[in-house]
Amino acid sequence: MTENEGIRKPLLISLALHLTIGIFFLVGVNFNAPKRPTQAVSIIEATMIDDGMVAAQAQQLADMQAKQQQAQAAEQARQEAEQRAAEEAERQAAQQRAAAEAARQAEQQKVVAEQQAQAERERQQVVEQQRKAEEARKAEEVRKAEEARKAEEARKQAAAEQARKAEEARKAEEAKKQAEAEQQRKAEEARKAEEARKAEEAKKQAEAEQKRKAEEARKAEEAKKQAEAEQKRKAEEARKAEEAKKQAEAEQKRKAEEAKKQAEAALKREQEQALKDLEALMGSGPTGSSSSSAAAAGEVDRYTGMIIAAIQRNWLVGPTMVGKQCRINIRVAADGLILQIGQGQGDGEVCRSAELAIRKTGTLPMPKDPEVNRQLQNLNLTLIPRL
Image (cartoon, rainbow, N blue to C red; front, side, top):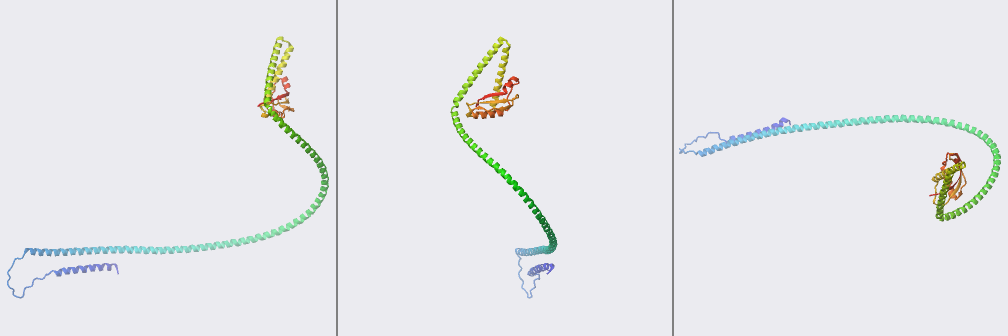
């Protein structure tokens, strides 16, 4: 069925329906004139027609005409609605056909795209197969080349191995000859060395015997010294215990001796001053010489005190050394350099500690006066440790 035929059928049905309604209204209305009666009629007395009835009939006729017009308007509206419905149906049908056509074209494009994709995949597969085949061919060529290289290398290695073995055989033969010659040489050297060894061994045995005897004597002497040292250590411990007990008394005694020495020194200074005053009064030459000797003695005492103070600054004194002393001789150069330290006399610990302090001091203060310097070059110092 075509598009025109689909529209024509509803229009024909609508037209037929309108014609039927029109015929119905036309048939309902009597357009014929009233027939005359065939028989003689009697004269009827005329009566007046009611105006209300005529008006009612006129109104009825107007109503019928209005209804007919309404029916015609309704029919026309229905036809217009049907026409609009037909046009809307045609538009929707056209849209559906366009959508169907678009869907068909999309489906066709999809099919074409899938076919193209399939063709591309197949082409890629072919390309991949060709690539793999090419790689396999190249790998096979590389493998064959590697096998050929390994075969050539194996051949070269075999030749090299053969040459190496021949060289080793030659060297072994040469080494064998050298070993035989070396063995003969070593045998001769061994014989000579054995003779020398025996002579050296005899010499060493004699020396070892002498060393053994000397070592035995040394060990005996060392054992004796250790016994004496142990005895001395015990005696020293007993002495130190006794000395620790007497520290307070010794300290008091030292202080008393220092006070005595200070008093004697003050008395000596007073006597020297009195002697100087006396010599000044007398004004004699010999008195002047005595004054010079006294001044030199004073310088000696002063520098002796300075030397002792320098040693005291480098002296590490322990509590067990308090109340003890050490008298020690020192030989000094003119510039104050200590040349020799004599054996100390007094407490052993104090003397050892004092000797270390003197060595640590190194250089002592010395005067410029030649006579005083000469007197200080040989000193006998009495060193008393102080905390």
